[in-house]
Picture 1 (cartoon, rainbow over the protein chains, first blue to last red):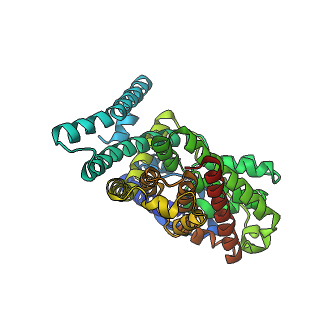
Picture 2 (cartoon, one colour):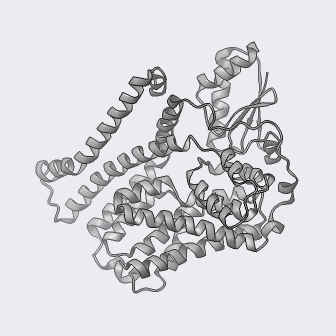
Picture 3 (cartoon, one colour):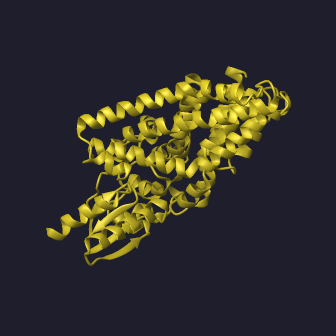
Length: 81
Length: 351
């Protein structure tokens, strides 16, 4: 699973990355987590509100920091699909 | 069980009853605030409100509780209401709008759209890609920090409805006029070219879609926690300074140097306010104390707007998409608007 965190690097983006890493650890899935800070690349995903979470190339969440459980839910839905 | 999990576990009935109880507790605490500190500090401890120490200490405790309650209440309500809006929706509403009406709509949406200043650049790119004129986009970007929910909460509690409406009206007017002025100057040439070349791809996710009431309530609770955690040091310093001014500063000290008869007071207030970028929460208790000491409302509003509107971190972010010329112009136009507001209100309202 390829996970990308979109955001210029403010507190919200840092929180989203932490929450996502926790969710990945909780689920025990193998995933790569990368950060995307380039604005052109962020816009390329169609995202206007950061932070945003991209899983396997698809934006699944933007504009807010979810809880670890919510991210785990989102990721779990993708592993079974 | 964390508060968020607790909320999540609630049934709809229990959720609304819980919210009702929370509202009742809030109202009770707010009503009991003044009598409680009167009783504790004046009757039990024996402070005299006529003395400097007495009035300063009373002001500090009473104001801290009042401001904390106002912030909790208003940030919660604003966050829940805002969870229905998103930058994506705003863009859809602004797409294809012309200048003029577009600026008015953009300023209004700037106030109600939840917006983190880190998103300024992606939002700017998104608006431009959707064909929103630069001046209209600017109205949005100016209104968003200028009409600030923390400032609204505090103004409402400290000064009442009138000055709050003045602040919101003035903020919207500045955003509309500044956007119109910048739009007329054909500022496109000072926008970094990559903005116009960037195409929005992918399938965007609207953050406002698919939220349940529990999600919205939880977002409200989290936002209250986040903002309070961030601003409490500013708040205590601000209230402390306010209390010191309240108790110790001679009555005519500020009025003598910055009163209504000093024509430069507004300019000086804005010049001090812009680099002092902090938080409305730290500045408003100060503003309240200065108002008590006879400073006119226009000067104080101008000072407060200068503090909240032009933030250095946001300007640095915007530098990624706007050339320095346009950033300077942006600051100049907004600062001029704020100065004009200060003089206008001083003339209309007096002290």
